[in-house]
Length: 109
Image (cartoon, rainbow, N blue to C red; front, side, top):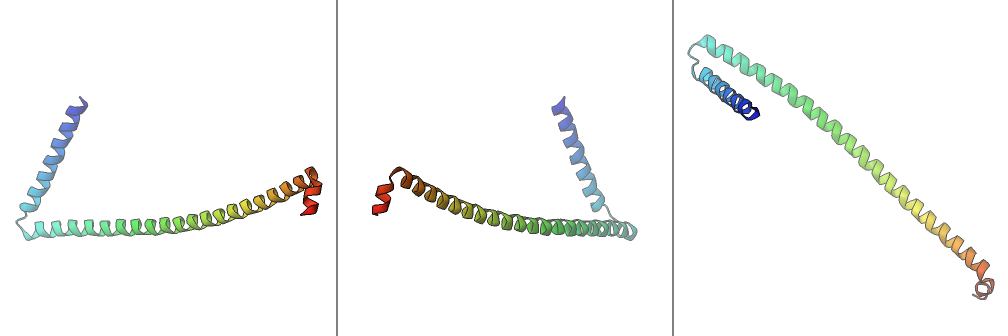
């Protein structure tokens, strides 16, 4: 039944597409042409408004992405600094431990 409903919808869509094409093909008077032109201009304005909204959204997304990339870079730098600090602390502690374990070997060096 889902396939039948899908096929019926496809037929309706195809029929509506054919009807729209027939309407445009059957414009015979100036009044019909004016109405069609008015409709097309309305669609054009609507499309331009939608394009403007999408462009604005894209620019906001790009700015947001740039901010996130900047934050990520700052966090990476911070992690690198922390790793270096940790490594230094580890070496100091290791040296202190070695001095406690082998005090003579460190004094001779």
